[in-house]
Amino acid sequence: MAEKITVKAEVRSGRGKGDSRRMRVAGQVPVVVYGAGGNSVAASAALSDLAAILRTDSGVNTVFSLDIAGEGVTDVIFQDRQIDPVRGRLIHADLRRLLKGEKIEMMVPIHLTGDPEGLKEDAAVLSQALREIKVLVDPANTPDFIEVDITDLASGHSIHVSDLKVGKGIEIHEAPETVIASLVTVRESELEPQLESGEPEVAGTEPAEGGDDSAE
Image 1: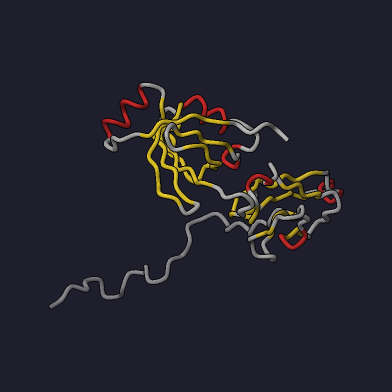
Image 2: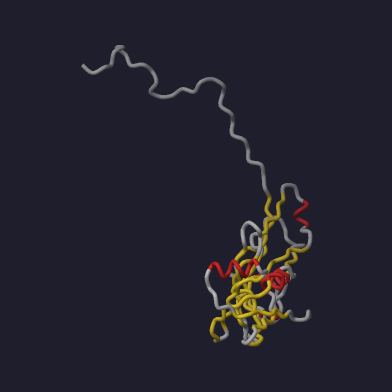
């Protein structure tokens, strides 16, 4: 198991946009820490430290220690985050405190493995409908992904959530009938007969007899 990451933070008093802007210029990110029955704490942490966590394999599911000066050390996880749409940079984060052994809902990616025999058939197409799945788990034991073997998937068949096999302590929070992946056969539809060339007849276009049909 990888060594737990510790991020140092400072309590912040300012809450305005100007204060947040100054922190970002200084390489800091405003964060709010809450949960586990404690009061919420507004703090700031180094952008480089938080960005490094988001770049790990576990990303937002990473449990790390936050050491807030004067407040102590607590285990946290990303609950929400805001990314600058232009620069792609983290500009704010909500961090959730964790109690030891506490289970919370997490989103875990689904990775398909294997080459289905049915995919060798003409016009067979593999479709992955579900790319991540909601589970209830101790964040410290959250898998980086859930592997689904599709080697035996035949054309016209699907793999459902109910078919998943997960590790001990992981509870799936998705409907069992939800489709994860399916192998379908796509046939080219028959072309409709083309209309013969020439102007189509339109009902009601023949001129009325009697010539002038203006009101008297």
